[in-house]
Amino acid sequence: MNRKQRRAAQTQLQEAVKGLRRAIALRPRDAQAHNELAVALLHQGELEEAASLFARAVALMPELLEQYRNLVATLLKVNPALRAGFARVADAWPRELPDAEVLEQATAAAVLRDPLLRCMLEAGPVRDLNLERYLTRLRRLMLDLALGSSANDKVDESTLEFCCALARQCFINEYVFAVSSQETEKASRLADRLTQALNTADAVSPLVPAAVGAYFPLYQLEDSLANHDVDARNKSGHDGSEIGSVTSRAVSLLDRSWPAPVQSLLVQQVAEPKEERELRDGIVRITPIENAVSVAVQRQYEENPYPRWVTLPSDRGRMDLNHYLHQLLPAASFRELPSTGGIDILVAGCGTGQQAIATARRFTGARVLAVDLSLASLCYAKRMSGKLAADNVDYAQADLLELASLPRAFDLIEASGVLHHLADPPAGWSVLLKLLRPGGFMHVGLYSRSARGQIRAAREFFAEKGVVASPEGIRQWRGALLSTPMRSVADYADFFTTSECRDLLFHVQEHQLTIPEIDAFLRRHDLAFIGFELPPQSSASYRFRFPEDRRMANLAYWDVFEKENPATFASMYQFWVQKP
Image 1 (tube, rainbow, N blue to C red):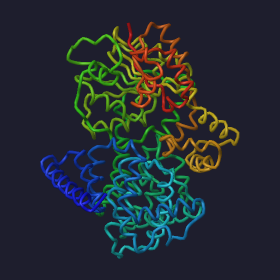
Image 2 (spheres, helix red, strand yellow):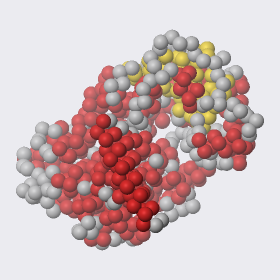
Image 3 (cartoon, one colour):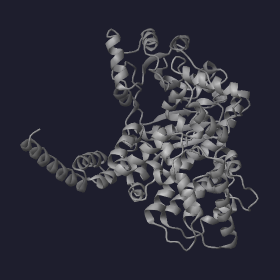
């Protein structure tokens, strides 16, 4: 490009920046405009403002988090200091770098005040191994900083904001970051200092609760100094029924005056768990839970509610189910539901409510019943429903194997990620079909045997080693797995939090199915297969391979396609069927 062309390109870019600034002034919640302006400023070298705008775009459009690798690449582009430290830690791993090389004094401020990094820490789990390793080392620096602090020290604002954001990340990922025995001892001492200060009403540096909250949940802060083992606190969970055990000492943290970042941290780690505890008595149980497998699965999700989510994709407004399916599966053929002004939906195995709330916000006139085995998961879901004003969802505790007697029928039943955790998946599927109205739709998610070979290998590896699915065991062995031929399991998004990693690699009950098995069930029950949910690239590949299947609904062809492309359904078979 010659000088004249470069000048013309710069002028064009400047005009684009001006236009995007005007657009944001008129539409301050336009995520796309924020993102485009950030890209333009990145090209101009305005890195700090670009980072701020990228962070705003993520806050307005949380689905950007689904493209996590792209987001990490953007983070490193807008912050050269962070990129350099990130690379040093990644290149040295597993060798330990000196603290000064992890975070150079001259560039520390640029890392700690980065708004995009803080946004990513607070908006969802970190899902990048090298970023996790970098943050693990920064957490250790934060611990030492807090240990050396006193109540009279002035705390740099950006340092405190970053420390609180990192503590919030650790709570979100359920303390899955690796921790050394030396860190455990230091964090225990710091927790004792915080407890002592609360007992005596002494002042304490705001860095102290931030650092403690990065190693174990503050709602479990001890009422006395008797428990010096941080990992013992974690073993009982920031998970399960123990979430109800919000200590009085933890609640007393809420009575103190703290800087805004610490206040936000305490909302997450004390006030919200306390609210979940208070919701327990309001959730009804509509079936017994007696099946041995159901009881074992219930216990897992009481201990580790899944997933511990923070944000939902943008609310794009409501639409009727027929329109949604035409939009989602444009090649599909199905009988449309008659328009009645409302739609009854059952979400079977709703977990912590992410799917149920998204469904309730998606469909016009939706009336949602969401059921799950785990009371802890349901409390999380109900709290999030209140936070997001999803008042058209009712929650109940139930075993779907016992739902046949439920005196209700549904136009849509969602059973994604639940049937394969039953003792007998076809039996549970048959129960749900009894609750589906004629012409009703079912959205099903099942694990693919073809796609989960590495998961089976990892499970066998852990079984041979006698690994226990405790928080400590998961932290230790997920790291060990990375030095084996099964390290590709880290490509799964579920590798990056304790509950999700347990669900992925240590589940007490999991079936993996094949397309012919699914086809056989559909034929036995005379169900019409409508189509798979897949990324556009996979759908295009299938159309190229089987152009004669215009509806993309020939399961024999799909079986051939999966054999040729075994990773197609790496997440799950996600598909739609219709009852006659």
